Length: 462
Image (tube, rainbow, N blue to C red; front, side):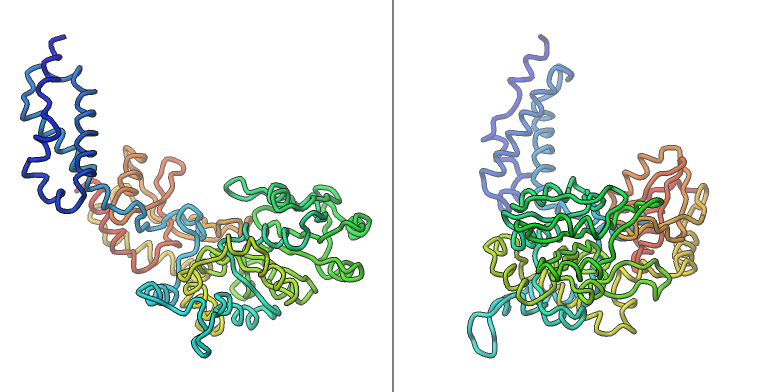
């Protein structure tokens, strides 16, 4: 009961609003926002009063409330999204925004976001244009598709395509392709919500051409094929080649929707990586509609691209749902610049960050690790060791990419990692076998000095 007197010492909000320390905030924010911050500060103090010294002065209470309010107000202007140095070794890290945009894409976005643009205006005629015209010619040239449209992610691309091809009808799909990806995205759920009736064929490990053919009936809308990009079924398995499936489907006038997920339009084998199905391979095989991501191996912004035969793309484009999932001017500007990088294969690796990180030699990665190590003020407990990177986001799921990282021993690894994450810039690694690992494959050369500065700030001094 002795602390009850402290409640009477809490200044009124009107008194707090008159304090000089709030003068600059009163100019920056509306009075209501500042008042709300003070009210929260006062409530915070009220909760703590039972544990306070009963001799706490009115001035002390006032200062605590003001400090709480000022911190809250400063947080309002502090961005929630921060630049992160990705030292996880996961190249397409969904939590960190997947593919880092190329310099060309960044410059194009900066230019377009600075004012108005011709998103849906044909500058030659002055009449209403179509936003997909900014990327469709590039996709046609790079993949051989007759036409293409872009939506806000690949899940939307699959959903919209299914809804267009087979609404109220059956979509035949192999049981071995009823995939789930991150965020609880499940193919059966997408098929159901799209208004299609899922018709499963085959078994988990084996599906034959005859399974598809026997399932075709008068209510078949399409055949759906999902590339199992985030896992592999190995051993006693069988799947139908897309060419054979396309020939059979054509005989029955049934369209095929092929969801490739990763968005590979250049042969990764050229750089010693495993084969991943190319968009153009599916189209050449006779697939009517192909869907793929823009922010995975393609290296662009979050988007879903739908490419294929002109008539089916036209139907998808005119689907009323298209307006609900379309992209804005910034995504189109970033994607246009990203696609143009593929027009010059000789310069592609230099300009596409995602592909660059995928294909950098292990020697180059080790040099980056050595550069950081050599600049550390105290190297005690820090070593350079080999490790493995991953592609991430479901691409190349079995592929471990040789890499090098900084391995840090510390008395409190969790706290060190947290302080790195809360730094400016933030640094994200991972803890394994009682060491904090900073994989240098996903650290850009321009980030070596900021990473070194953070480590020198947080690691013990000599």
